[in-house]
Image (cartoon, rainbow, N blue to C red; front, side):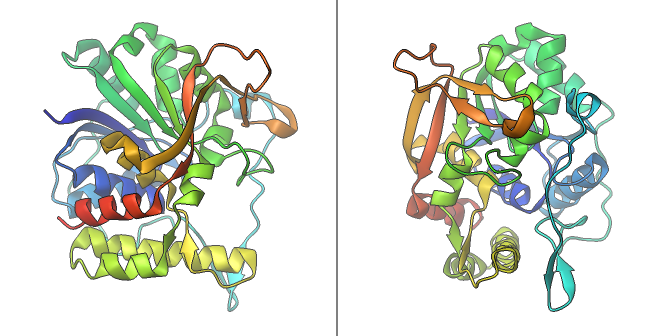
Length: 320
């Protein structure tokens, strides 16, 4: 029987690959896609998701969710430390307001129920436990768990694309999805749900190359060609950002989906106790307790993945 999942996204280029991978996998039953703010405003992440699901000719319900963090922007004056990236006099981005290559409009609409209400109703009433995969800020799930903590009992596992051990992107020491709503991430860790972090360390270890993009384009499918363009776009951005030509880029979110399908794509992980820093220079940092006598483990933290296995899975699921 397919594994039931809820996918929580802030679409977003790499979110798009995660959605296509999940919807292309017969081993997964995507019962709903929840949209949240993050890479873009929630109106844009929802519209991008609707257009993508429509292009895939799927009837998967899409739920519009939270427009901002639970507490972060009420309590502290913070902003993402991102500078414009310019190439040949033109600003380029890793996430554009609208995903390129999709129809300008779609008849598909978000469900009337909001994402938080969907989480509560779905998890209260499901007969089978559901795996939740979050690849954006965890605000929707954090709000749902705060309102009805008992829904945690029906979550089989929470797989988070987020967190970092040795790397950072949005700050010197934090990963963006956790940084955007650290309180929501800590709420999930406190809930008792089995948690797996697919960290920035893991996604960078399995970066996709321009040669991978060529192989995906050669599949000839919408999903393969769409993903190839995303790899090329993200590589162009990373090259301009770093000031040197690169031939690869991490496409973070779909690795979390692949980990839900086949855990062997993760090659290094540790069972450990993680807390999320909620303020200061370490805001949003996932702190692994490595004391001689650490606190009891509350998650599995993945730090490395197999590029070859990951690519094989993308070729399989994006080739349909």
